[in-house]
Image (tube, rainbow, N blue to C red):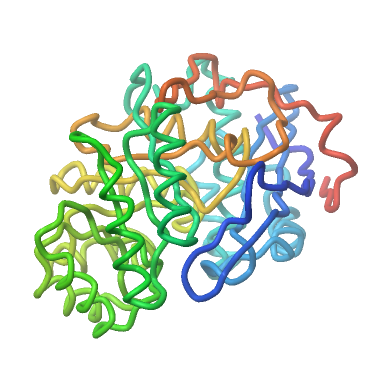
Length: 366
């Protein structure tokens, strides 16, 4: 089997509800998502999606996808998409960095491999579970507004809530307290600063709430700063932005820097490298949140296969990005039910992409 054509499409999404806000004054009301289609000489096609959270989060932005695919595409045409490790080696050799670009190619190749073998990607990644629980991200707002959001999403079946904090410590203390006042036993609250605190600010928050039951996620920008907070905090810690691959995970593990890690598929370069990090976490006994930066139906399907092939006892959480947006590209994509997401059982990603909704390709390589 050989790749004969690569097409990249870009589709605008808008949030179904209010703007999504997080630390550093970042706020978005919509996104430009990139959909990649790989066509082969045997008639099989593979799809993927990469949707950066604007241009100020992660080393990724929507305008970078077309240039990256234009650079890599001529090297990929003629290659066997089912030789996924060889595809990754080729991409790493021809393009330094730009993991989010490589992720789009990698996921589409997994979709083709699943279709070629008649297996869902989850089975190829290690074994398919039926479903798994989700978290809901709570956009930064007033304490009262965030508590209302927690209650509303709790009514939809969610039991894990990721609060967007990382601003003024006094405001963040009030936000966390408000959320904790409305949750029930068995619920999980994560205060996610997205690198937004300086160490002294993070310490103010964890000291003010030292006896409360919640998780602290990525309080500061660097591993060293997070370690300084961890040394003086009683709450479990989640690391996210600093987990950029297997080497970063090993460094953090050696320093006992966290209790949970967040693995984002496009940050590490696709499902192949995400699986490497995931499997290492399973070996080391580290719990995981498995997701991506953002996306819609295609990203949610990829997350479902990734999370749905992971040991349930080490799957801390995941999320369903297609429930946040106003656009659907696959009628059969997994949808949340009572705070859980099913894992597709059909071959590959297990979804049918409505190509009529993709518009004209912004890059085509043949």
